[in-house]
Image (tube, rainbow, N blue to C red; front, side, top):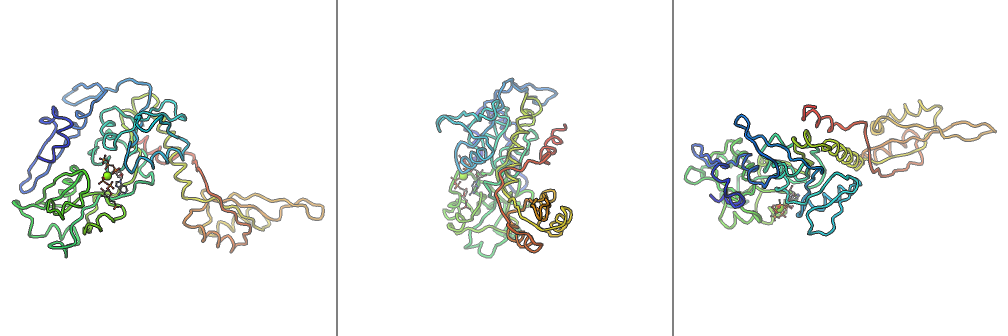
Length: 397
Ligand SMILES: Nc1ncnc2c1ncn2[C@@H]1O[C@H](COP(=O)(O)OP(=O)(O)OP(=O)(O)O)[C@@H](O)[C@H]1O
Ligand SMILES: O=P(O)(O)OC[C@H]1O[C@H](OP(=O)(O)OP(=O)(O)O)[C@H](O)[C@@H]1O
Ligand SMILES: [Mg+2]
């Protein structure tokens, strides 16, 4: 029953109809239906039952609502990303939960806890949001109304991973398979897993054939549960691994449920039905893509001797790390020799991946490049981002 507690507290009236508990032959699984999340939220949407299905009408409003994490480790990085994309959020004071982005006049920012962002997207109270993929997967429960618009915002990296003690009966257990085969787990005495992920946890165990498992919830400091004797294993987020190490716990092969980072998500209904939502999403997506793409690249200019622009371009393209985004830009550099204006060398401009910086400089030198200048890039706008095409196709547009 403890698993139900957090949801029950928020939503007592929805309790009986919203939750389903099933006890497959020898295990205990709990699932919380998608609808329960909808009914748990104080929705502004209007609900009707059409052909036995809930049809949620979209409530008219002029603003597009973007949910951002109000606290925790995602909050500052999210504001930094928006700022880097020239979308600074103007919040009058930190305790005010609504804010504006002057560059996007039709957008209203609402600061919420990450899990509430997902719940409010499902209920129609938000249109767009930024949270970790772990939160979307846990609280979105595969809802078709949630669309991942950008799946890699390059911060908030972590993984949802199963961990067990390094000591005692687990000393020689190093994989999920070995854990599943331990004779200790029976119907009467199942493997006890402490987690905040009560949807993804049971789903993962079921998919991996672990039969005798029981879950309990806790909101934080889960790593203490095995040493306290409350649980045998934990399922929690890991990034550096320090918390696990400091608590004598280890991850196991096959025990990663999900790799997560920050993502931009949207409500499908809002994108399709709310005026301006798709255009705003396009602009935010383009800005994110342009900024994140530029983060990984340097702009390189260099001088090269050659008889023609084609000859110089040919030399540059002969080097594997110098092909640039679409090939090199080659410009003649003119000088006056013996009274005649002529181009005897060329300036080249290319983008190179930051990872290949030194290799690229070596290759440029090898083909006679000199005066190599490296500058950071702020944005790379392509003709059209692949993610925008993907979004349109997910929406059937
Ligand atoms: N150790 C970590 N390293 C990197 N990212 C993390 C880590 N832990 C959590 N995250 C990411 O940050 C998100 C928010 O985590 P945070 O702990 O700030 O909030 P929360 O625990 O979900 O909120 P609350 O404690 O109010 O329920 C997580 O959903 C995950 O995507
Ligand atoms: O692998 P590490 O880098 O050590 O990070 C892992 C820890 O980070 C998260 O907790 P958080 O710090 O968010 O505290 P919380 O338990 O209050 O959520 C997570 O729940 C782990 O406890
Ligand atoms: Mg946390």
